[in-house]
Image (tube, rainbow, N blue to C red; front, side, top):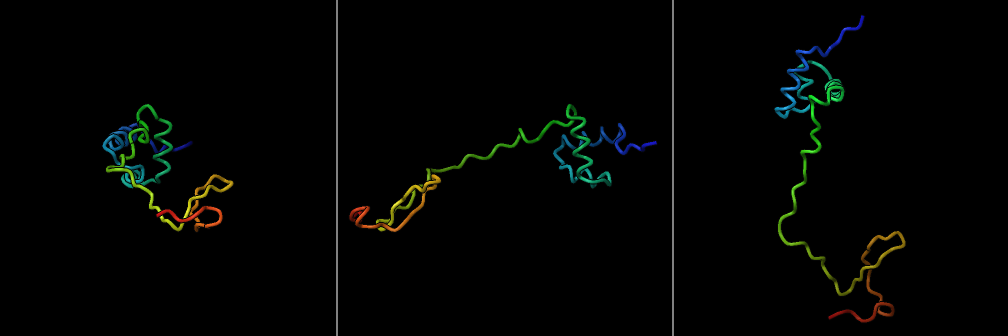
Length: 99
């Protein structure tokens, strides 16, 4: 005989706490279980425990875009892998320094 930890009463209470915004760890601490038991139960009852990852959106950066600092004695080159690196200016290759 298997003893089920998640009874219907506990699921209803966990659902209420989930909708209030408590984390899986906080809910598990209230029930005296582990975080993964709450996560697994929420996955099995996805209709009652909606995903929270859709609700999170990063905040847009405020202010004007940051302009790169230009150094007259350095140039930006693109490597074979496509990375942009800043290297010292070589007068015979890059020409004289910009004023």
